[in-house]
Amino acid sequence: MENRPAQTDSESRRLQSAFSELLLAWYRASCRKLPWRGVEDPYAILVSEVMLQQTQVRTVIPYYERWMKRFPTLETLAEADEGEVLKAWEGLGYYRRARLLHAAAQMVTSEFGGRFPSDPETIASLPGVGPYTLAALASIAFGHAMPVVDGNVIRVLTRWFGIRGVPSRLPARREIAETARRLVPREAPGDFNQALMELGAMVCLPRRPCCLLCPVRRGCAAYAEGAQARFPEAAPPKAVIRQFEYAGLVIREGKVLLCRRGDGGRMERLWQFPSVLLPKESKKWSARWKSKYGALKETVPLTVLNYSVTNHRIRLELHQIEKFQRYKLPSAHWVPLAEAPKLAFTAAHRKLADRFLTGADRLHPAEPWKNDR
Image (tube, rainbow, N blue to C red):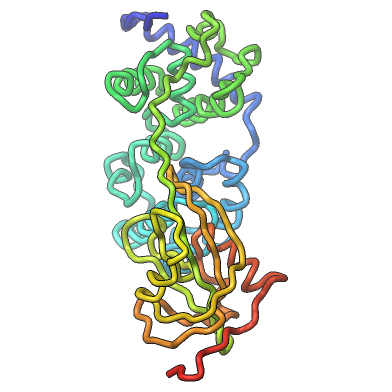
């Protein structure tokens, strides 16, 4: 199947009219009732768009509702400390989004007097506002005719226009962007962008698309050829990286030993149990643990947890440290057990904390060595 030839200006206008009118009519009659739809507050729209990045709607809804209850305005978010923000975001993943959202609220409050900017150039200057977030916020909140391009939109456009190539690479990326720009109408661009995303989320599905329910199927190149499964073209998968994590659970005198991840890298500044990460499975992990945190004498294996982060497949073993020797630990902190659940943990270590610090499997304090100092 060949790509469609470029349209003349008149053909483009006719295409826009037919496509957008059918799509908008379908959206206004059939769109899902979501808590962020129909709101005019740009802050609320920004929160929803940031949360929806790389996250399914059904996952976002309870987080969004809790977030807006806890931080109902830009000012309340700007005044919160980072730990509180990360705790509210805990479990949603991609924590950098929460930090940047926090920074954007602080910038609007300090530099714009709490009044959300409406022009695209200023919106783009806010922390964490990239092309997708800018287009979504500018079109939905302020009516700017800017096209949103996300995974759902890419799928709809590559199928409808028969656009070849991996979407993340040139020239397909450029063609998708130009097609989206040509289609977005000057009237109700926010509704149109949401309609396009809604079509991809509810009808033009990655697998088994519901083509008979599609309001614009008659113009779809992939549907006409029965080639929906070939669009969009997939990039070669990344190689899987396997790692082995060994964590220690140490409790004494009503406190638990925890570490806070540093700046940069994955899951920065989140809390976890002290652990070491190795490229291969090893029974000598305790030597690495000792060099990092201090000597241990007796350990008891508690559980194994498998989890994934991007293309990393990690096998996590948790061991109770029953006898230990106390050292000054600049990379770790003794946290009161009552305070530990209030911290924002990495997703895997949150599961361990819920089970062994507050759940039915809560453990007893460790026993120090007699020469503990």
